[in-house]
Amino acid sequence: MGLPRIEREEPEALTTDEVMRLADAMDRRYRAFVLVGAFGGLRIGELAGLQLGDFDPLRDFVSAPRSANVVLGVEHRMQARGRS
Image 1 (cartoon, rainbow, N blue to C red):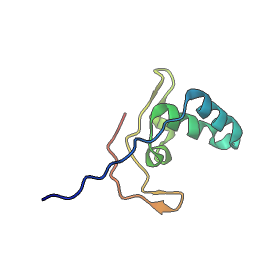
Image 2 (cartoon, one colour; image 1 turned 180 degrees about the vertical axis):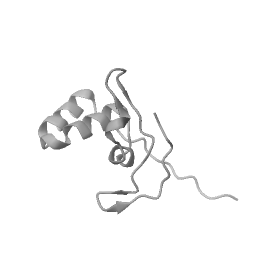
Image 3 (cartoon, one colour; image 1 turned 135 degrees about the vertical axis):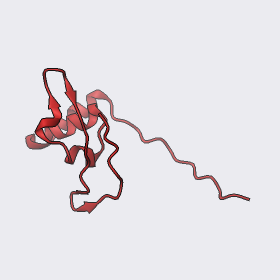
């Protein structure tokens, strides 16, 4: 006899229009953070760990080789996967 299966609902993703409206409604200093996160599929820790050298505008490429452990005062225990 095993443990009961926990059914989880798939989170609903925002549409492109909803992301753009959200970015437009926010303080300008967070706009790029929201857009890169939403359209790049990055997690909050990956966004917080980004550095200037992670952006390659000539190739339209962003690399997320590290993840911040503390984001907005909350410690995250997940290890970075080195996503690109």
